[in-house]
Image 1 (cartoon, rainbow, N blue to C red):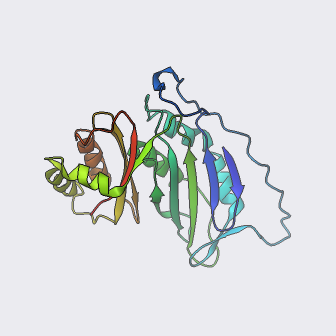
Image 2: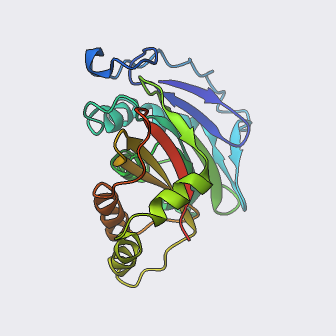
Length: 249
């Protein structure tokens, strides 16, 4: 894992092995977490004012604290991918998280504002990990910062335009009823605006699904949609693994 200090964001590249794309998926070894060395952070003079901070909406938070906290769970973040993909080597992408830190240092909220990872188990695993960390107390008010985490895929996928995905989903007989049932599983919690990333295998089977949202997607709803999606049969992919994004309306 390599952590870079940036202006306003913490950029974290989480690597789960290296490999090239290809069709012989079964021949490839299971990805393992092999973090690259973390960049050494400069030692701060305690008599000097903090300069590297993440500027928030209302206040600021120490970048060193944020990086050290994430660095400490690098192996666990790697494991979120390796333990949840099975032999689906094509699962990977960038999970961009947005944090809100309260005045007492507690994580007030964390949401996957942009994600094309396409696997809810990975996303939930990372959210649970980073939401429990201590990033220190912000100064001058509550603070916000973004955290992009990249998971490397070991084989390639082919994109579908959203119009094609929408048409394929509408062709599933149980689609509307399934989505209505899953909204009930939210137990009255308001659903934030959200989109999904789906992986579709030859034959039209959905093998994995994940979410991007402006806020936290209720777990009951998300689990329900993922389970239903894996039962859907979409249009055939012509022998390719499709990675498609779809805005939930």
